[in-house]
Length: 311
Image (cartoon, rainbow, N blue to C red; front, side, top):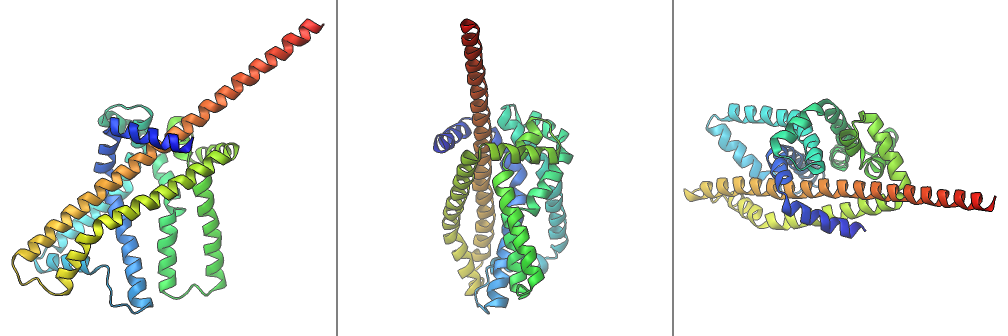
């Protein structure tokens, strides 16, 4: 059933591009921010912990140097403010709108308006998702490991407890956003309903979550391979100091901009796909529950009729 839903989600996403367009134009700064946080902490781990010569942020430092030399730091700061605004304001708005657009395939403007009504609930829910998300957990663990303060009973206890909550959120919260948006539940009521729903359908939910994580790893490995060649090209041009040629900086800027846009493009497809995927699993399970209720009612009616005939 899970694979059939995955195929149906792919077909539905290809037919209706509204959700993809919405994801691309509203979630790209969120994606870039998460990418930077991961790369920064992996970079610090390699340099400060293992004394590696490899710097993953060499390309970023080059562009920061160009902005500094041309007195464009203020522009960069304004861009950071814009990214923060996008991260904390537009991301919750878009997250709610994505569920609306999967539920009812209206135009983007109408779904954004519906998402605005759920802004505060989605802001709170996104904060919980971020706090107990895999990326946040891994980034923090990398940071603590780099600082060499993991060998502490209290720190180890905190990370073990936090890891348990991350696993619980991963397995039992996949329907929380749907309950909050579709059934107008409050945040914590939506989480409780999601936990109950996941326990009632624990086999399907476990398979669906596992399949989603496998697909996510598969997608991002392909994304990494896709960007490996241009990234190595930029890294080589900067590392071997080939910037004397006038065309090299232009090539770097073109590769940088195209790379970021393509990264956001592919991630928008991935995020859109999983929104459709989770919603279709939810609706499929709801239909199965309704069928079971109808069958149980018919069986009880038959039993009642049989008893009446006997009497």
